[in-house]
Image 1 (tube, helix red, strand yellow):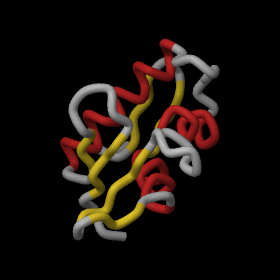
Image 2 (spheres, rainbow, N blue to C red; image 1 turned 120 degrees about the horizontal axis):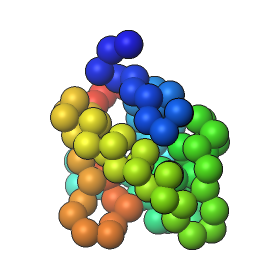
Image 3 (spheres, rainbow, N blue to C red; image 1 turned 90 degrees about the vertical axis):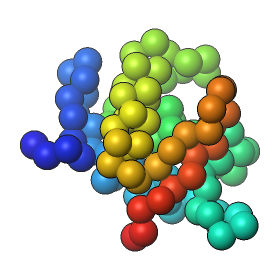
Image 4 (cartoon, rainbow, N blue to C red; image 1 turned 135 degrees about the horizontal axis):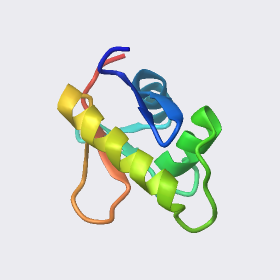
Length: 98
């Protein structure tokens, strides 16, 4: 595996696939590509992790999904692909061009 794939809690997460799903739902604001995970018309990262990789999720945050989501955020930031706004916001700036 390379830096774009990791296994956590028994789930294999492909960051490229996750990023592409985020990118597909993103918008350009003031010259920046932005993913708003808390928008009504966007599937949040926790939902994407469930849909793409079958990581459990409920209406309230599932602890396993929360751990996997945080690790994905850290790794995408380290790759220079995406940075999450501070705090509880579900807003991410996407830096990788597709």
